Image (cartoon, rainbow, N blue to C red; front, side, top):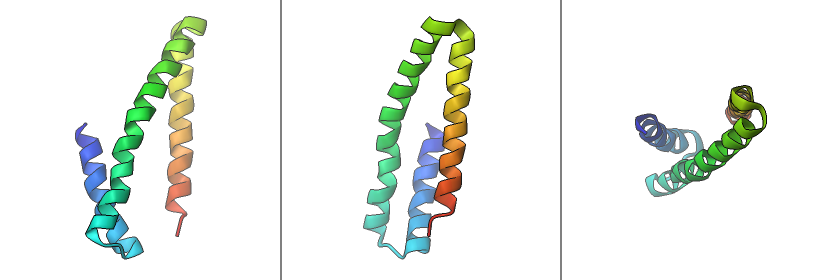
Length: 82
């Protein structure tokens, strides 16, 4: 939870400096990250439980690895945005 708060604060500063947004606009956009986590945690837990039922612990680890790789790819895409 602490990392999430840090990312939200850093995102506001980033959006202000990179896109020349007001504090209000940058905060509104950065808050989307927190709302996204509500769904990401639920979907990740559901997928992990589903894989656990199908393939036991190996399935759970594969789902986690797949989501981690997907997250890494999304970060690379985000970095390249202008």
